[in-house]
Length: 99
Image (cartoon, rainbow, N blue to C red; front, top):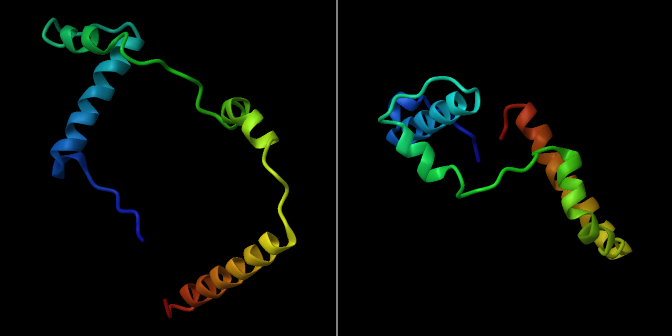
């Protein structure tokens, strides 16, 4: 699987996202917004909630769940080692240009 980055000029969906981000960024920075764009802000302003996106915030939200996870078994660890070996083999082939 390859991640491809595309210009919003080639995608109507990305263009809409760009517009949304631009409008809300201006709003959050207390910059002027044309009256035609105000309904967009008003309709979305109280529909969602924001939360910090960071490793610490994620750890805080998921702490109880992670704390209750059982430790890995030897069988789990063996499977992990097998999968890591497969991935390392794939990585080495890719580096040699054989992938």
